[in-house]
Length: 358
Image (spheres, rainbow, N blue to C red):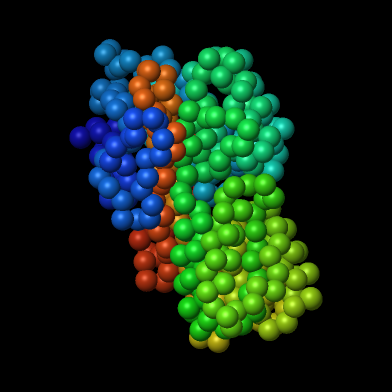
């Protein structure tokens, strides 16, 4: 089997194991999947390119798709870009992966989208910096006659052809429930939110708070933004520990913030993990996060299969370009990673960290 054929087989196996989509509604509405017990079909009719790499008979050979992620410094968005590049190889189209320098740079992201439109891309697949503001880029794409696929973060004020993202409230609730049970349903809890205005942060926090509210013995003493950044989370956490005592758990909207929070907890004299230490929950995965799970410092992290985000984003873009019906919303799966299954995810994270997009 060729290298391309092997990649296709791996991707199809991944979709079959964790996928969600059985059918699209006639009005282009939701195609739902929920958690990691999804269905067994891909969300697209796009056909793969010939395995020999030839362009003969490949309708996608002249198509260019711009993929703009929040930052390559966040492992989730590297994974989205990675999945998009793999889809480009499978379907025989050109994928151009780009990123802003850091999260929160909405104007830079809009400028990158504008530049790609000028360069003549046929579609945009974007992980918006936050829900507000990116509508400008959606409108510009539509004015140029090209589809816009939103991934991970929903868009306010405009209508992308498709939004691909998980149920963050449900996912946050699941992680929050696991943390609440681990601390015996009692104690002071801190929540570190992500970027203000990002739907992922707002909804994930809602899920965390919903889980905590089920335990009368739990008090959420603080819930504060740390912008999905490790350094900022370390600073925010240090300040919160000055104001609040006897913290039993910290739940973060991504793994980078969890790693920053751990540093401040330990500097403040807290034991993290173990039977009596502070319980840390998070979302997303990176090599340092998974290593922290193996060390017992992070109890659980959620995972929403970013590679599928990127892969399906390119599929949806191709379908839209080729005039096929595209669902308005694809609900992606999520999983929870603990010490019991962390070794299943670490090899891929190491591969992703080493991947060169140039």
